Image (cartoon, rainbow, N blue to C red):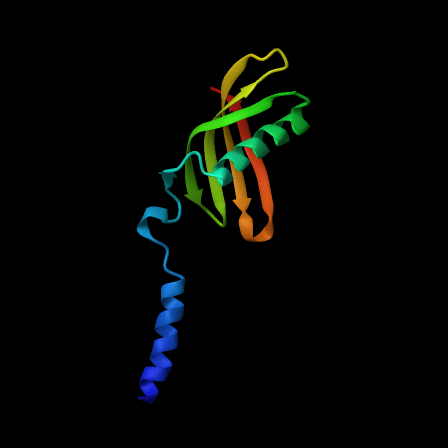
Length: 113
């Protein structure tokens, strides 16, 4: 009985750290729900941060596709649409590194596609 009281908490702790195989570290996985508000928020952040760094004035429209990668947080590789000051829409690929538990985000790349 004493062994059960020792082993049960250890088992529960180990299960809480289990990472499902669909989110294994290192590999890129497609984002299943591209309309998820958090995914769209990351896309908006990417455009805003690109504008801040480059002096451009793009307007975020939407994320059209993307993948995630688990690496000391989450990398989001997104294809998004944004329009310029004249209203011309174009597609861009952005990579954003997020550590949500710290409130940290960093734009690591932003390129026209």
